[in-house]
Length: 187
Image (tube, rainbow, N blue to C red; front, top):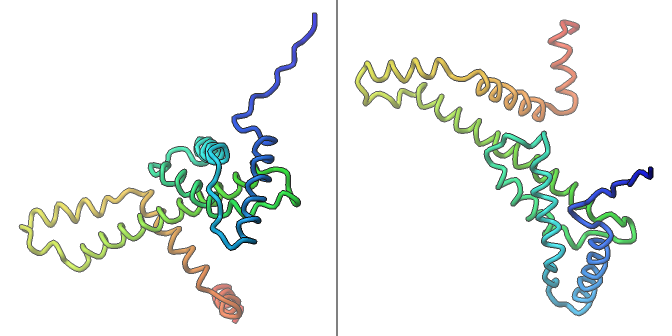
Protein backbone atom coordinates (compact mmCIF):
# COMPACT_ATOMS: atom_id res chain seq x y z
CA UNK A 1 0.00 0.00 0.00
CA UNK A 2 1.30 3.40 -0.98
CA UNK A 3 1.55 6.16 1.60
CA UNK A 4 0.17 9.45 0.49
CA UNK A 5 2.32 12.31 1.62
CA UNK A 6 0.34 15.27 2.91
CA UNK A 7 1.27 18.56 1.39
CA UNK A 8 1.21 21.26 4.05
CA UNK A 9 -1.38 23.93 3.43
CA UNK A 10 0.01 27.39 4.02
CA UNK A 11 -2.25 30.30 4.77
CA UNK A 12 0.02 32.60 2.71
CA UNK A 13 1.58 31.52 -0.58
CA UNK A 14 5.12 32.88 -0.27
CA UNK A 15 5.93 32.49 -3.98
CA UNK A 16 2.85 34.40 -5.07
CA UNK A 17 3.48 37.03 -2.40
CA UNK A 18 7.05 37.39 -3.68
CA UNK A 19 5.92 37.95 -7.28
CA UNK A 20 3.34 40.51 -6.11
CA UNK A 21 5.99 42.28 -4.03
CA UNK A 22 8.37 42.40 -7.02
CA UNK A 23 5.63 44.05 -9.07
CA UNK A 24 4.81 46.48 -6.26
CA UNK A 25 8.46 47.43 -5.68
CA UNK A 26 8.85 48.06 -9.42
CA UNK A 27 5.81 50.38 -9.32
CA UNK A 28 7.26 52.15 -6.25
CA UNK A 29 10.60 52.68 -8.01
CA UNK A 30 8.84 53.98 -11.09
CA UNK A 31 6.72 56.40 -9.06
CA UNK A 32 9.81 57.62 -7.19
CA UNK A 33 11.62 58.34 -10.47
CA UNK A 34 8.63 60.33 -11.74
CA UNK A 35 8.26 62.19 -8.45
CA UNK A 36 4.82 60.75 -7.75
CA UNK A 37 3.36 59.30 -4.58
CA UNK A 38 3.89 55.66 -3.78
CA UNK A 39 1.19 53.44 -5.31
CA UNK A 40 -1.49 51.82 -3.19
CA UNK A 41 -0.89 48.33 -1.89
CA UNK A 42 -2.64 45.59 -3.83
CA UNK A 43 -5.48 43.69 -2.20
CA UNK A 44 -3.49 40.47 -2.23
CA UNK A 45 -0.52 41.96 -0.38
CA UNK A 46 -2.88 43.60 2.12
CA UNK A 47 -4.70 40.31 2.73
CA UNK A 48 -1.41 38.50 3.25
CA UNK A 49 -0.24 41.08 5.79
CA UNK A 50 -3.56 40.80 7.63
CA UNK A 51 -3.36 36.99 7.66
CA UNK A 52 0.23 36.99 8.92
CA UNK A 53 -0.59 39.49 11.65
CA UNK A 54 -3.71 37.69 12.89
CA UNK A 55 -2.02 34.31 12.77
CA UNK A 56 1.04 35.54 14.67
CA UNK A 57 -1.27 36.90 17.39
CA UNK A 58 -2.43 33.34 18.09
CA UNK A 59 1.10 32.19 18.99
CA UNK A 60 1.49 31.07 22.62
CA UNK A 61 3.73 34.01 23.55
CA UNK A 62 1.00 36.49 22.54
CA UNK A 63 -2.04 34.70 23.96
CA UNK A 64 -3.85 36.25 26.89
CA UNK A 65 -3.31 39.92 26.14
CA UNK A 66 -6.48 41.99 26.23
CA UNK A 67 -5.09 44.40 23.63
CA UNK A 68 -4.55 41.83 20.89
CA UNK A 69 -6.48 43.94 18.35
CA UNK A 70 -4.11 46.86 18.95
CA UNK A 71 -1.16 44.52 18.47
CA UNK A 72 -2.54 43.31 15.14
CA UNK A 73 -3.23 46.89 14.03
CA UNK A 74 0.29 47.97 14.96
CA UNK A 75 1.72 45.06 12.99
CA UNK A 76 -0.30 45.94 9.89
CA UNK A 77 0.58 49.62 10.19
CA UNK A 78 4.30 48.91 10.49
CA UNK A 79 4.20 46.56 7.50
CA UNK A 80 2.54 49.23 5.39
CA UNK A 81 5.12 51.79 6.51
CA UNK A 82 8.08 49.57 5.60
CA UNK A 83 6.56 47.71 2.65
CA UNK A 84 8.62 49.63 0.10
CA UNK A 85 11.88 48.70 1.91
CA UNK A 86 11.58 45.05 0.92
CA UNK A 87 14.48 44.24 -1.38
CA UNK A 88 13.71 41.34 -3.77
CA UNK A 89 17.41 41.12 -4.68
CA UNK A 90 18.41 40.36 -1.07
CA UNK A 91 15.58 38.03 -0.11
CA UNK A 92 12.94 35.98 -1.81
CA UNK A 93 10.99 35.56 1.43
CA UNK A 94 8.54 38.45 2.00
CA UNK A 95 6.64 36.25 4.46
CA UNK A 96 9.63 36.27 6.83
CA UNK A 97 10.16 40.00 6.27
CA UNK A 98 6.58 40.84 7.28
CA UNK A 99 6.55 38.33 10.14
CA UNK A 100 9.63 39.97 11.62
CA UNK A 101 8.13 43.45 11.35
CA UNK A 102 4.88 42.31 12.95
CA UNK A 103 6.67 40.42 15.73
CA UNK A 104 8.61 43.49 16.82
CA UNK A 105 5.47 45.65 16.53
CA UNK A 106 3.78 43.24 18.96
CA UNK A 107 6.67 43.52 21.40
CA UNK A 108 6.56 47.32 21.25
CA UNK A 109 2.81 47.32 21.92
CA UNK A 110 3.25 45.03 24.92
CA UNK A 111 5.91 47.37 26.33
CA UNK A 112 3.65 50.42 25.76
CA UNK A 113 0.78 48.72 27.57
CA UNK A 114 3.00 47.68 30.47
CA UNK A 115 4.22 51.26 30.77
CA UNK A 116 0.63 52.53 30.82
CA UNK A 117 -0.27 50.01 33.51
CA UNK A 118 2.74 51.17 35.51
CA UNK A 119 1.68 54.81 35.16
CA UNK A 120 -1.88 53.98 36.26
CA UNK A 121 -0.60 52.09 39.27
CA UNK A 122 1.81 54.85 40.27
CA UNK A 123 -0.85 57.55 39.93
CA UNK A 124 -3.19 55.50 42.13
CA UNK A 125 -0.39 55.02 44.63
CA UNK A 126 0.36 58.75 44.62
CA UNK A 127 -3.29 59.65 45.06
CA UNK A 128 -3.35 57.68 48.30
CA UNK A 129 -0.01 59.06 49.45
CA UNK A 130 -1.07 62.62 48.71
CA UNK A 131 -4.32 62.12 50.67
CA UNK A 132 -6.69 62.81 47.80
CA UNK A 133 -9.24 60.77 49.72
CA UNK A 134 -9.55 63.52 52.35
CA UNK A 135 -13.09 64.41 51.31
CA UNK A 136 -14.32 60.95 52.25
CA UNK A 137 -15.64 59.86 55.57
CA UNK A 138 -12.91 58.27 57.75
CA UNK A 139 -14.44 54.79 57.45
CA UNK A 140 -14.50 55.02 53.64
CA UNK A 141 -10.88 56.19 53.49
CA UNK A 142 -9.74 53.28 55.65
CA UNK A 143 -11.61 50.89 53.35
CA UNK A 144 -9.72 52.22 50.31
CA UNK A 145 -6.42 52.14 52.18
CA UNK A 146 -7.02 48.50 53.11
CA UNK A 147 -7.84 47.70 49.48
CA UNK A 148 -4.61 49.37 48.43
CA UNK A 149 -2.56 47.38 50.92
CA UNK A 150 -3.88 44.16 49.37
CA UNK A 151 -2.70 45.08 45.85
CA UNK A 152 -2.20 42.10 43.61
CA UNK A 153 1.33 40.64 43.70
CA UNK A 154 1.48 40.61 39.91
CA UNK A 155 0.99 44.37 39.80
CA UNK A 156 3.78 44.91 42.33
CA UNK A 157 5.99 42.55 40.33
CA UNK A 158 5.25 44.57 37.18
CA UNK A 159 6.21 47.80 38.96
CA UNK A 160 9.45 46.30 40.26
CA UNK A 161 10.41 44.94 36.84
CA UNK A 162 9.63 48.23 35.14
CA UNK A 163 11.59 50.28 37.66
CA UNK A 164 14.55 47.88 37.48
CA UNK A 165 14.52 48.11 33.70
CA UNK A 166 14.46 51.92 33.83
CA UNK A 167 17.35 51.94 36.34
CA UNK A 168 19.45 49.70 34.09
CA UNK A 169 18.86 51.99 31.11
CA UNK A 170 19.87 55.11 33.02
CA UNK A 171 23.24 53.69 34.13
CA UNK A 172 25.83 54.60 31.52
CA UNK A 173 29.51 54.13 31.00
CA UNK A 174 31.81 54.32 33.97
CA UNK A 175 29.05 55.05 36.56
CA UNK A 176 27.72 51.55 36.02
CA UNK A 177 31.07 50.01 36.97
CA UNK A 178 31.58 52.24 40.02
CA UNK A 179 28.13 51.33 41.33
CA UNK A 180 28.90 47.60 40.95
CA UNK A 181 32.19 48.05 42.86
CA UNK A 182 30.43 49.85 45.70
CA UNK A 183 27.81 47.10 45.97
CA UNK A 184 30.51 44.41 46.04
CA UNK A 185 32.42 46.29 48.74
CA UNK A 186 35.62 46.31 46.68
CA UNK A 187 35.95 50.11 46.85
